[in-house]
Length: 96
Image 1 (cartoon, rainbow, N blue to C red):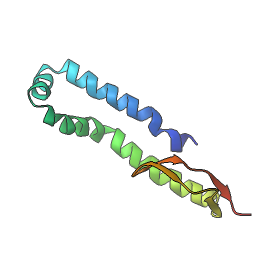
Image 2 (cartoon, helix red, strand yellow):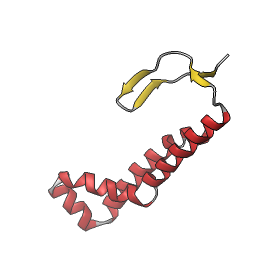
Image 3 (cartoon, rainbow, N blue to C red):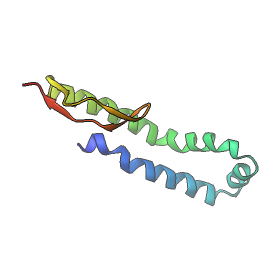
C-alpha cells in the first residue's frame, strides 16, 4: 500500500522544493517572474533528481508486486475516472 500511495506525499514535497528553489535563487526567481513560461522547465528540473524516477520505480514495482501477489485480481466495479490518468475510484477483488 505504501508504494501505491507514496506519490501523495511526494507531490507536496516537490511543490515545496520548487518554491524553495525559486525563493532562494534570485536569478531563477527573476527569470520566472519575467517569463512565467519558464516555470515548466523549472519544475522539470526539480523533478529530474528524485521525483520522476521515484514515481516511475514506484509504479513499476507496485504493479509487478500486486500482479505477482494476486494474479487473479479483477475490478470489483467499473472504474470512474477523475481525469485522463487518475481514477476517482478503483476497487479490486480477487476472483472467486
